Length: 179
Image (tube, rainbow, N blue to C red; front, top):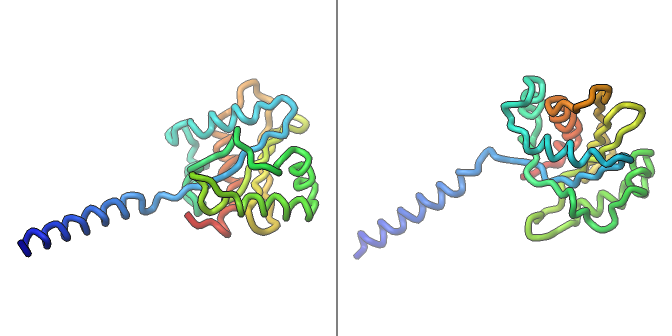
């Protein structure tokens, strides 16, 4: 009888350890994505970038993601934008409005639902201005908004370039990232 209890206990420990360590090293960002562009192509570009295989990524992009604290984008809210986040407030953020920055950071930090238990790590704000696609990486803490851009002169947006763009903009999430 004691042998059986010990065997069950040992089996439980092994199973628990396996499930605990099976996700070790896997750490992705939880973000909000908002498209400020007039044509609203950003959402489509973002989804294509998220769903593209890492094998399609360029060497620069792979190197960039390897240098991020978060390995990838784990969860992105694209259609379900938290209440209080809107184009007016985000335009103010890009202009450096301190009140808007604090307001949106508070929303990102304090948001909770079944999937987001500790708030968002940050936000991507997409816009197209004068033939360029801009991605603004906006963190849940701090003032460091990172802007990355790519030329849109070609008819088809290169997913490799966009993946690198989102990775570069993610650098601002690293300071306070905790998976």
